[in-house]
Length: 128
Image 1 (cartoon, rainbow, N blue to C red):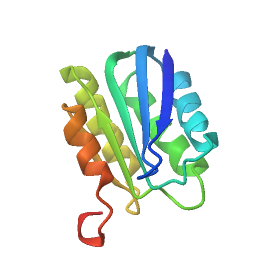
Image 2 (image 1 turned 60 degrees about the horizontal axis):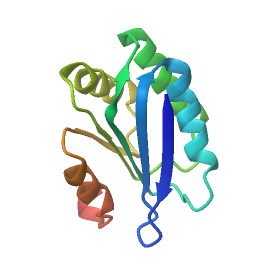
Image 3 (image 1 turned 90 degrees about the vertical axis):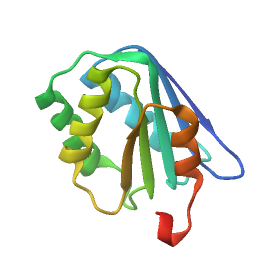
């Protein structure tokens, strides 16, 4: 799998675009890469999986969620969005949402990249 991470200068939103086959190790390494990305201050991230395919099971999705909960920066991001095309990626992303159970971060799964980006860019207290 390959991942490219771009930070929007104005919003500090991280846009993480993934392609190829995504495994547990790829997901963990992708999270670590985001955490080390210069310019990302932890406000929000959008993970674009439209060109990726997941090669993982539900227990592996739980493993990823647990890893992120235990290793993410001390201040959790305000928002995180996943964008998935297929039913499998969408369903596994929803499982991640349930397994994550971290109430500081608002999390949503989308099928449309622009909709996810628009949601992630809004930081008013009522919308976070």
